[in-house]
Image: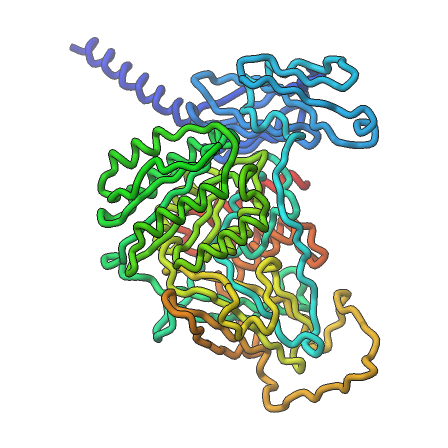
Length: 622
């Protein structure tokens, strides 16, 4: 009996030990140069599962704690192409890093030509025009997905952002812009950082960084669909400047009595969507969303590649088996007839329109349209025409390597919708589950903000971010002018950096006095007012706007809120990534200190993840 108990105990201990190893596995290995075969030291290694980071030793060896099977390890070092490796059932991984090829003068003279075999199983060779084989790349395929091998063939596109500068109230008393609740820029940049890549400067839209996170604003109490909040304090990166924090909180809906949804998934199944982080991730994302819908909601699926087609007619959301089969059957291949796909999706949505419900198209793509209406201007005009039908547009971006961010943002802005980037299944859960109702149900459209500054208090001001959302001052009162939409329970945040009167600043630029204009007098009686914030919005079914007006007093808060501190930390991080001329005393250290001191509830862990990103960038910029 005792022998039997000893054997049983031993088996149980072995099972427990094995269980622990699955979730706490030490991965070892060596990193070496693909070209020379020599070991590489100081390579940054990050485990996606455990969050642990380490660097390789002088002999290229490393040891890192992993969650085991399915975990992703990221390898990056300046001068080499980053790699992502999925952990299998082995605890040893050897990695060959390929050097980045920079188009300097020597390479430009030599003119490098890349030839790709169509299948992963065939040998890939990199050859110069002289015909000399530089190196066979076939052995690298066991280490890295195709997207990560040839980053020198990266065709990602980002629109130029000319950062907002300081303006004087005497010359420019008004600042006018459209709200933005998109979060695509933050998620996309997170993908780059997690792959050990320094983000593209124009991929960083600071307003989308700030608005990726929710804030604890007061709930609306009146008839307006949102409440307005403001706070004034010192700018963390420049103690001589002030920072004004403006927040909007949208009303939450009665989720037990939501109107029906007529949704059309418009799915890009072209050849460029074949990578694991594109169509396969997209399928999983859509399934998450389907499980959150009500039985009376309806779903249709339109796909487009060489041509557009209806693969699932409008179907009740309760028929999950039929919907999941249509999702599972989608395969990638062909060129990208984006224009034809959008037209068909709007046609299907219109045929199944709920007059009293929520009608929306959800476009999922990497943005690489190349057949039919393909230019950004053509696509924007097409979407602007279609939005008149009352059908909103949500865009979800996937993948890397040929991602067309600028085009996606423009189309989203034109389509009365929002724009997200899905870099992993956790982000899919955020967009399609946690924030589904806020993302699908619009409570206010064409929301515009106009701020008038008091020149007695404000020497100069600068709107942080929103460069692509700026409006002409006269657009504020023009109800025909399109602007941003606010979803149920959404928050919107905007920050202004202020140079108070009497403060000397390097950012103040002098101009010659005007000959034909007299200096206008400054109104008296408003000595305590810093600025006046005006908002215009329309209800979803109306065409006439409503006006809200709030005065912001010139008084620095004694105790700054977590809203103020965290949003300013995020803004500061964005300025560092953009290498902004206005970053002043910003540093990753100060960003970390402020973010850690303003975590708040953080139930979903988004703010904790932000801190991990900042720490990663700090490691990459010692």
